[in-house]
Length: 321
Image 1 (cartoon, rainbow, N blue to C red):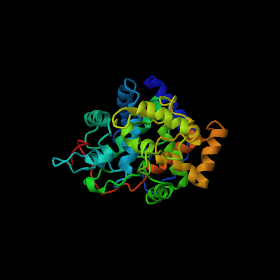
Image 2: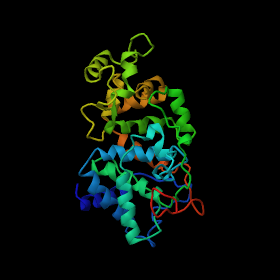
Image 3: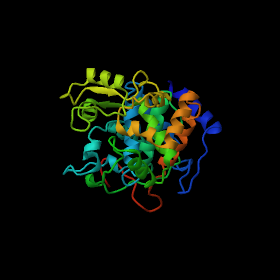
């Protein structure tokens, strides 16, 4: 999609789209006077990268999610540590990629408006614009976050792909997000890619008796076994087979058919509220999913943010000033 078309679409959706509750003092026009081209600069950079490699959309969305769930949306996942003990060095984050997109956007901003736009805001914008490049939903991104100075591997406690519904709900509640946000944001798996290593025990030795998870559709297990041999931990897997390149509601159809790749996908059928949401999206062909996803992403972007005099504005996203 051309940059000009993206800009037109963004303006249109901002007029007819998602409402923004703003309890934290962020502002859609935060950089209006000090860096009026900030969003356009970030969008241009994101389009350049994601249009060449569309799988970056899922990667950048995941990076934003992982950032917000540890110390809030403060860009701490971007920090490097010489002793390899930062957030990006934690096992769940070793497969996170797309840092070069954030760094390129930040570098372009520093040329135009040095010391003004935070890395936390850049990441929030990049995630939004990356999804838009692949024709996914748009959402407003209120700005004014500050960058954290602390990034600890030991603090990375993300929602696990092996978790049941109770643990997942607690993960989300602890961040001020609700059950609807949980099931809606799980819908991002429509463009997700994983690997055999994360599901081998689920399909080959679920209880230690050479069995598979009984919550899985047996036909899906057979298909997965054809792709993943017992000792294969590297082969990639689509989380929404047949629709992984399209941001849509098809993920919910897959889950409803008991073909969720992770336990955390399948367990969405174990809760009345999440199951009802899935059933509704299936029966209405995802009529409300884009709007719901946009609203939940806005909420995610407010999680434990730093504003005012807290934190800093990093000059380079990988290092504190």
